[in-house]
Length: 259
Ligand SMILES: NC(=O)c1ccc[n+]([C@@H]2O[C@H](COP(=O)([O-])OP(=O)(O)OC[C@H]3O[C@@H](n4cnc5c(N)ncnc54)[C@H](O)[C@@H]3O)[C@@H](O)[C@H]2O)c1
Image (cartoon, helix red, strand yellow):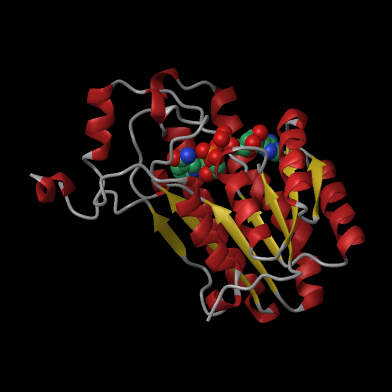
């Protein structure tokens, strides 16, 4: 059986760059009509060029997922243009951190406003459309930080743990409407968000030592999982939180297998 998203209408937030951009392109390559939402016009323009060159259908919308009015306007515009929303990927996120002693209220709020509230607002706007359709897929970006957090990530890890529980509650509420709601937890995917690619060599090796597969993740690794969750193949998966981390800490010291 193949993944077939032909003519499904998908929204991917934070799709101007990084993992979200690859998720959007992967869904489009599987036949979906993808509406890309981002807070940055320059990133949207860049994505538009890619879509135009590849001749892919879809839409680009400038919106801040933290703002309820912008979110409902964006979702209403997509519903009006395409008549439905089959897939929502809440990928937009920020990762600001500091040790708790030094953690400012602004940084705390920044994490929760985008990572937690942003996803909630998007789900609230899309939910009536999916209920009307009697079908839908909601896929929320959590993080490995929601499984095992790291020092300095209190705000980020707490905001992403909230995403996991929010996902389970919404899965329960939307089950009767045949709408599935899942979250996924990427491990270490080098992007502009985290600068893994530019770390000193010794630190890179220390991080790689935590991985069963001992390689950095690619945005495509995450996009493949999201694509599966968006498809009919995942019809019986809901309320789940799926780790896509190359087996980070699957065992206590994964590097022993490489010695
Ligand atoms: N890269 C990793 O290793 C990793 C690990 C775990 C989880 N994640 C999660 O995956 C998602 C994508 O991460 P990434 O590494 O691609 O990050 P990134 O910073 O490269 O991309 C994030 C995108 O979200 C957009 N965005 C930020 N705030 C927004 C807002 N308020 N409204 C709309 N768009 C907004 C940005 O403009 C950007 O295009 C995030 O939710 C992140 O927490 C990433």
